[in-house]
Image 1: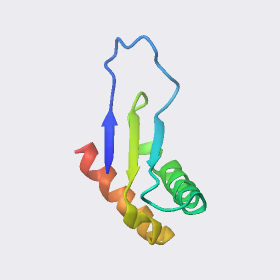
Image 2: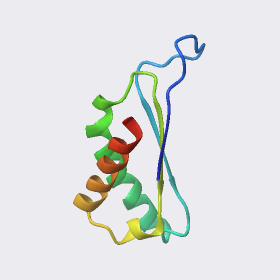
Image 3: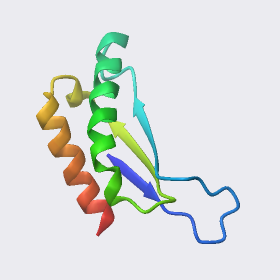
Amino acid sequence: MVHLFVPGAGAADQVDGPQVGFVVSKAVGPAVVRNRVKRRLRHQARESLSGLPGSAVLVVRALPASADAGYDELGADLRSCLERVLR
């Protein structure tokens, strides 16, 4: 699940680029699994940031099925979500 927020031009707290945050709850698995999912998502998101507006704030929520997903599958799911959000 992905949420995208793009503040208006008058936003006082402008940052130098898009920001990404990850929500990986304990339902995904133990700490080792949650951290692995976050690392994989972080790396995949880094490659996709160029398509986001400069002031975008992106929140990615990992569902429990992401614990069993491979690196390529997580990347494909993230890209698919980003395409839907950016329409």
